[in-house]
Length: 333
Ligand SMILES: NC(=O)C1=CN([C@@H]2O[C@H](COP(=O)(O)OP(=O)(O)OC[C@H]3O[C@@H](n4cnc5c(N)ncnc54)[C@H](O)[C@@H]3O)[C@@H](O)[C@H]2O)C=CC1
Ligand SMILES: NCC(=O)COP(=O)(O)O
Image (cartoon, rainbow, N blue to C red; front, side, top):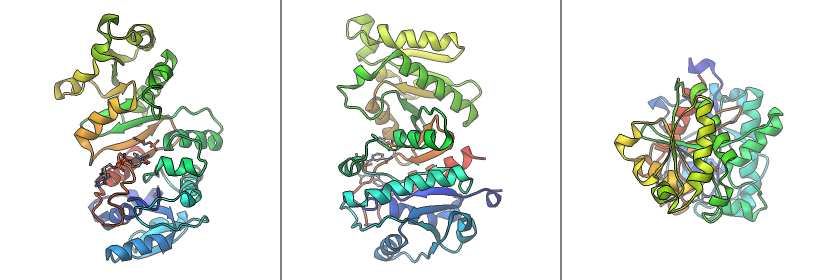
């Protein structure tokens, strides 16, 4: 079945991070059932990383159309036009053009039908900002690329998914002090609609159960510890319930992630990034997958970042990247 489907398009991520060695490691572990993929990267850079680690891996330069047949011979690499000059653990803004080209071409390959889905390796946001990148992260950038390529309005939603827990941060890459200001009834409603739609359409959950966190301690304690639950979150949930969605909340965030609580919902919507990502990464750091909902294509990613502190040593755990490949495979069948 897999042989007849296009491969997955994997991005390079920050070339000074662990992305390149994880791509090599995922290929080495391909016999464990991972789907075929190609990497949009600099072949010489991947060959240098493989050599440094003493991994005997053929780097096969190819175009996306030739990647599936090349996969058994070696790691298929679609060369980038922008130059890459990277030393593991030393991020440089000079590699931003190649990092972004890799993402853009992965989306283009998916749009063209040469790839089934996009699997991204981690980028260092601060390094890209230094080079002038104006999107907070992949999630927002992929939304913009998709809107341009597909010619439709796109509302990208971040979900960190594992068998243990799925969480969606309603506000994403904003400073903690800005999150309450960014939180609106409309944002919660729009996010929940996308989550319910994609859990049904892509994950096959017939009637998704959404649990929505409050913002404040004890979900505001009736207004004594904050009023956003009363003025913003509860009214949003009323709108969603009137549309027939199964929505619980606003729930005190500190008691909604223990095992018995998790059994009562399919996904937790949290009001800010760390409210959801801390439990998600604590429960399943190695298996967690970052999935962007709301796109016209499937995008997955490991849940971790560039890990510059261990890059180039061959000790980075590829499990989350492999989980991202497997989930992209599952969601595109
Ligand atoms: N999807 C993406 O592109 C993401 C990118 N980032 C970026 O990554 C950069 C570094 O972020 P940090 O907060 O330091 O998080 P990080 O996930 O890169 O590292 C946190 C800790 O976990 C360890 N770690 C991470 N992945 C590992 C793996 N596969 N195997 C073994 N150990 C691993 C690291 O060595 C480090 O000690 C930031 O610039 C951030 O923007 C962070 C999260 C996601
Ligand atoms: N903490 C998750 C994260 O920052 C990933 O963001 P993105 O680059 O996938 O948008």
